[in-house]
Amino acid sequence: MSELRFDAGHSGRGVHADFTVLPGETLAIVGPNGAGKSTLLALIAGLLRPDTGEIRLGDHVLTNCATSTFVPTHRRRTALLLQEALLFPHLTVAANVEFGLRSRRRGRDEVSTTRDHWLESVGARDLARRRPGELSGGQAQRVAIARALATEPDLVLLDEPLAGLDADSAPAIRALLGRVLGRDGQSALIVTHDIMDAVAIADRVMVLDGGRVTELGDTATVLARPTSQFGARFAGVNLVDGTVGEDGALHVGDLAIHGVWADTGSHSRGQHAVAVFGPRAVGVHLSPPGGSPRNVIPVSVTTLIAHGDSVVVTATAGTTIFTAHITAAAAAELRLTPDAPAYFAVKAHEVVIQAAS
Image (cartoon, rainbow, N blue to C red; front, side):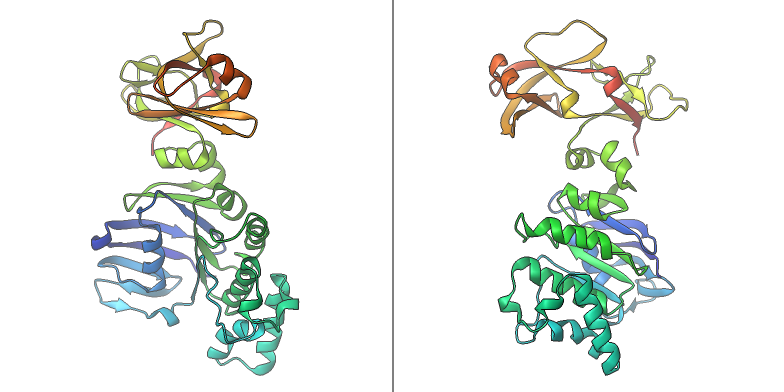
């Protein structure tokens, strides 16, 4: 079992990050397009050289810019899975899985036993005699997973491995990855744009934005109480970034957001903090509502999108973007249109306030 310790950067691509992945842990990397997610994987895999810092896997230094250490890709004990399975088209499924084992000079019996074990583990034993051209996308990705894990890598790198799969195949492969990653103590990193990948596979989530780590924590916490704008969008919640006022509320300009603090410690005036609340907790009104204590936010509607039996209403207040989920009947009654003024209301007990990271 090996811990990944990454503290390196590539100035040409504007990426520098500092993080650790524990043995047996799976870390999901999320962020907007161009944030540097695939660059991180390329640096770890040895497909790209950093110009600052060090990358270690267990006791082995993979890259150290100060000492000009650079271990080539094939000696890093890492496995890389991409959107495309990239199986050898001229080899059978069985031979594809055997390839990495034979390159490591394993004995014939060990090769056969390990091959069968992993084909069985990914549910592809009956595909052993087929060639890649005879496989569906989901079947090919199962074989690619077996081929990668059969070599017993210390670290598995996955760059959106489910993005090219259809709606029927993706859930099954996601469940498979959740079962096999980390089972033998290896660490894993998965780059994804799908929240379900993080929920089903990852122990922790790291948000990368502008080449820098903006948020890192266990999956449940990041999804329930994100502290970065992209983390909030990824989790599908609203996030307001501001400072704490004398009243204990979060203040952004003239707007005060009251809520429940995530921790019971002391909070000082002027402290940087964020408020988080779900879109289904938001009521949409044409005039300021009365009644029980609540936060009322004057907004300008930007879009309305049907989503199942509800309507997703997106609106802005200054530079902050808010989202509300309301019923189709409520949307029809309100007769909302883009650019129309409205009021978003959310009860204080539905809002969680926490110190910003």
